[in-house]
Image (cartoon, rainbow, N blue to C red; front, side):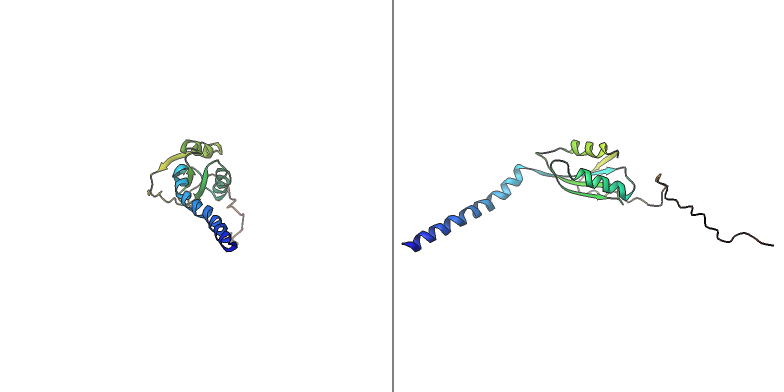
Length: 135
């Protein structure tokens, strides 16, 4: 008789595991995960880090990828907790203009990094390269 009780206990222990696994896909539908990619006006790694650090803490954000080359911010978010408009506003609050939204699968154009982007990196080092002519 004791063996029978142990079997029943083991069966009960296994039950919640099975039902939890069944519920997982249904749960995902409830909190609908959406993806959006914003084209944002930022031009250096510090800007990218600032966006990364701040927007990742927004409610509902599941995944965040900031790409400097294409100036994009790709987000996965829970549509029940936030909206595309809220996320756009959270980027703009940091001082970066959102210039557009890429459609799913659309690639952003790569930007050339040789442009002048308003940061003074002190490229004039004042070196004397010996171009003076001595008589």
